Length: 141
Image 1 (cartoon, one colour):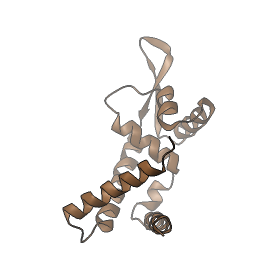
Image 2 (cartoon, one colour):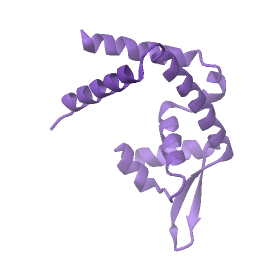
Image 3 (tube, helix red, strand yellow):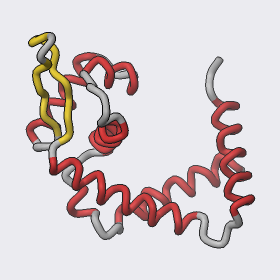
């Protein structure tokens, strides 16, 4: 029963994002692009390379290369050479990606506020701890 309710909630959350105010602007990026943009934004203070993305998202080199090429074509990232090694290319977000990141963040904050409306701080912390425990329970190993 809990699994079915969580799946139902996940479907409602996905549907919620279908009707967000920034949907059309954000639609240009796929879900994976959004995760990569989020990761790059979160780590903007250090150099990130394709290998880092492969490791973090557990994807193959060919998949990472394909996704990054598409993101570059869409104007979301740039691959910039590194002074110490011309073969290395660090991946940086473009202004367009930063703008989209801000819009996605606005929608996420709004969704989060909607989800927990009427919950006390204690209830939110308890719910979060339950979800973390469920994730640990289901992970292999």
